[in-house]
Image (cartoon, rainbow, N blue to C red; front, top):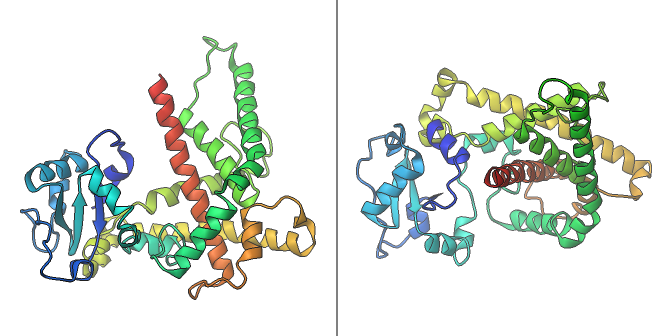
Length: 344
């Protein structure tokens, strides 16, 4: 299962057959037995379902595409004991996220989300309902709106300027050594840049890049922050044995201990964001936060009186801010890196 998710997360399949797997419970989603059901792909095994089809050298989306040629654009497979609908037509995929978006907007529950998203308090992982709608509205208006982006344009400009100055400084220090060229890990550079921009927008902090030569006192905390987010991006995309076959979840401790790592990373992430939240509260109490407000400041002001589905305001604030940081950093870095590759 790890093999499947790893390739689905890391392989760019743009331009290829679009494969969307939407986990669902057949009886709940399609209720009526009179409705025509999508065919189930042959070859499923007891307990593991069709997982064995994705353990070879062939990439998962290629395997799913081959099944689509045989069974049509819509068919079902079993991921362990869970049935899943596979859609390999962009027209049908579009319909899922427009006409039938309510039915497809909730993610299936899995172990990683339970540990790393404050028990599904993160917007990107919470089930559809009043809480999801409220938080989506808040994030759309207070962080992703044109007005907010315009207010924060100086953040983007200043971070780009800082990154370019650091790059130039490194070149001036090393240009006389060897060929006069300086090797740069562009993926790391883009990652530092996007993380700085997102952190400043969300919590008013910035990450010290890999090329920084100052602020040595803050360097350990910066490395801790970077490692925590890197581990989060990796672990939240993993699917464990217990996700596919719940009663075999105990095998994870024998096969790699990913659940233990998830708990450890969740604790580290919570420590970081709790520290940021307390700083914001103290600044607000002292009256220092009346000027420029980042997203966490705004959340402190508007969460009062909102239906939080049983979560406390601090948990929702931390979960939503982490969601914004995680969602805005990894995808933006990947997009920038892909554009660079296309230009070379």
